[in-house]
Length: 318
Image 1 (cartoon, helix red, strand yellow):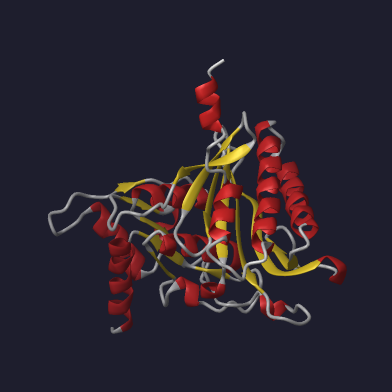
Image 2 (image 1 turned 30 degrees about the vertical axis):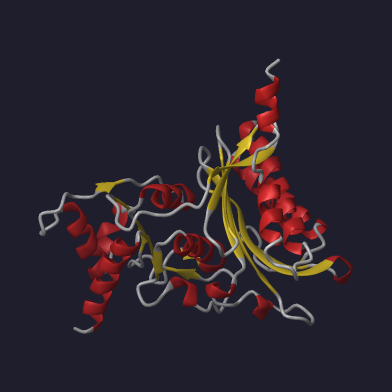
């Protein structure tokens, strides 16, 4: 038995230890967020186990939704839950109510790439109401996603950068493996569904054309598109580039949902040093009017998003 090696394994930075360390930086903190995050992490571990057992996608969607709703309510720290799977918001009964609103997609993606996405913010004192979740993304206090598969990874931001944790199956713990993730200022990859190209607006069409056939002598960008937003954004975060999901003639308001897709990914991207833009404004300044509202989104490396912003600004001046 390698005692030195085993001793080292007990000195790992787990996600719980990481959040507790962050908590000490806020003397007024009562630990509510730490408790809530522990329940989210437990839900992720449960879903990871179910995914690895190979359950059918439809069953997994329903199971994941039930797991997260029960985990969030049982934390005693939530007041309103908005799930992609449920048409209406869930209001937590007063005896189990806390101060956090959580918006999440319990299982997003195809049967081979499964992820959940969530974001949360604090609710003002008083009886919870639907307007508490219809706030601009800049008001959120944390965002994250979990990717399931042969390796289970959890990315988290509490407003002070982005950190990535990988599940160690032998310990049953998420271990810090990607500290302080920073997106490159400019990338070599663009990610978009080119099957919709004939329906794009002019700025998107021009930008993608520029990616393929640059006129300034720079090398062309490579296309990478998985079709799962989390997988594509995860790669963009780590390696740079841009992810585009614009409006088109079939989806004039965009396709991705604001509360549990656009907002959490935009928050993570900005925390990593990138940008997120809707075609009209900074994504986190958007104020949703409905819980399942949709929006176009362009997010990624700072300089790459600047280019698409310039194309939209030029189009407006015509």
